[in-house]
Structure formats: C-alpha cells, structure tokens
Length: 301
Image 1 (cartoon, helix red, strand yellow):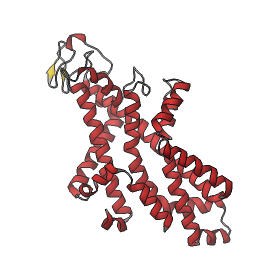
Image 2: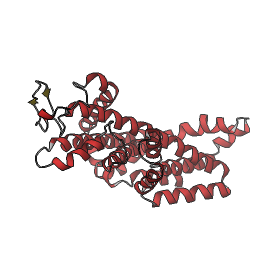
Image 3: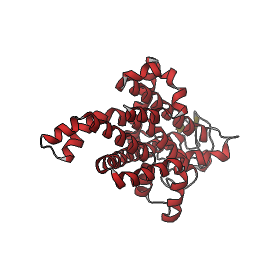
Image 4: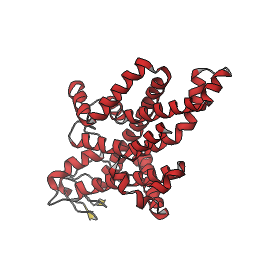
C-alpha cells in the first residue's frame, strides 16, 4: 500500500489539476471537455481535407485581416489572416494536427520507456535499482526544458524524429517510479510469485499479470502527462527550437503573433485559446478518469 500511496502522491502533485478537482466532478463539464477533445482529435485526423485553403499560401494584399473578413482575392477568412496574409483557420487546423501528433507519440513513447525502466528496476533490484532511481531523482530535480535545449543545441534543429523522442522523454521518471513501486507491491502480495512457481516466465508474469493490475495508475499518469507534453512542444516551438517552417504548430503561431498583439490579437489569441482549452479539457478528463479507475480517491479529491 505504501507504493500505491506514493504513486497517488505523484498523481496529485500538480497544483493545476488540484485546482480543477472540484470542477471535474461535474458531468456537464466532463462532457464538454470530452466533446472538445473529440473535436481536436477529428481536426488532427482530417486537417488536410477540411482546411479551406493551403496553410502556406500567402496573400500580402490580405494581410492582418480580422476574423470574418473577405480578402482581396475574394476568399473568406473565418478567423482572419496573419502578417503574410495566410488563412488563420487553415493554419490552426494544420498546427493542431502536428502538435497533437507530437504530443500523442511523445506521451506514449515516454509511458512505454518509463514503465519498462520501472519494471527493470523492480525485477533486478540491487545496484540496477539504485542506478535507475538515481537517474529518476536527477530527472525529477532538473527542469526538462533545460535538458531539451541542451540536446537540441548539440544535435541541431530540424530533425522531427529527434524532437518527438526528446519530447517523449519528458515525464518518463514518473512512469518509472509508479511502475516500480506498484510492481514491488504486487510482488509483496504474492500472486506474482505464485504464478512464477506455476512455471510462467518473467515476461509473461510482467505482461499478463502485473501490468493489467497497474494499468489504471499508468492511464491516469498518461492523462496527467499529455497536457504537459503539449505545453512542452508549444514552448519549444515558441522559442524557435521545436517545429521548424514550413511546418507549423501552435507554438509557431504564438511566436508569430507576439509582435502583433496590439493591432492583430487574433494571430496569437486563436492558437493560445486552442492550447488553453485542449490542456484544460485533458486535465478535466484526467481527473474524471482518476475517479472512475480508483473510486477510493473520490472522497479525498
């Protein structure tokens, strides 16, 4: 139980999620959050087909048009245009697609790597466990943005695969700590040892018996880590070391719009709202998942 309490403490250490605890119990709020996430997922999958114009097409005669305007060429721009006359709605769809792609693959990559490292620590114990926990403590004490910027400074920008893997490593130590602690708890309960005595191999014990019992905690951690991954991607793209042109992301759009906040607020306001509502919705759904998968925490929320 001590390891279960430790994993729950990691789940609750986010002040942002704690502030949402009272809101997330409302079924209406949860449904609205789910609807928003479904809409974002739909856009991410179908962006190339539903965007009204080419997101890279420029029209300098129609630059900085406010939302609901018609451009010089006769094109209607629902969300306006940016400083190069590019349709903001089309760029928003393309940005959501790429940001969600990076966030989803990065989050699941970190979850898989961290969980496997936790299993290794729990399986071998001894000096292997000590080394892994030192790495976990180091990762937890060091702001990941600093590590990411250091790696990009050495490796350079423009490598999409490197960027996705780098984003995915954010938060791996939480999965490692949770999987290690709950695996040790499962071993102490005895059922893992009983299955092993029946002749099951190590891989079968961990994948068929231990993993299903700790999956709920890992799913909750994924819901916690996903908004943080989105924020990390947008922050690095905002700084110019993430997604590179001609590709676009929500962080890129924010970066382009910061110089036009006074006379064209929509350039930064539209992607800013998309980031805010997406991370907020995922946090609310994550709180709901925590209550559903672990009803004993409802009274403590």
